[in-house]
Image 1: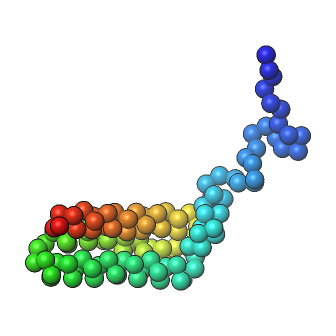
Image 2: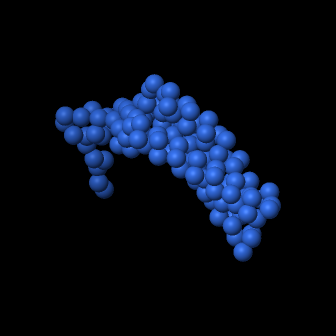
Image 3: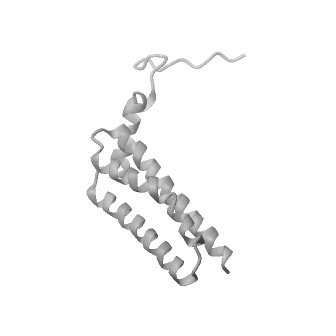
Length: 120
């Protein structure tokens, strides 16, 4: 039979490797790694949301159907999240709002592809 591994002498038994201490530290590392505090990143996300909005409106006018407006629904919470990202003062809320923003944009892009397939 083998014995359980011993902890390293310089680290206690329940220590987290690499010095990560809880959710706050993890959020700080993710925000720093993804550079979410950069105004350029926020501007790119806003431009992407605006481009998707214009694409949906142009598709509605060219196809004369309300179906291309369906992808606008996830853009509403994504737009609100974009506003909250710009005023977030701590890393944890910034990360949460950015996840909501990215999820709304991804869902809207997926709905655009579904609506595009409907009209082939």
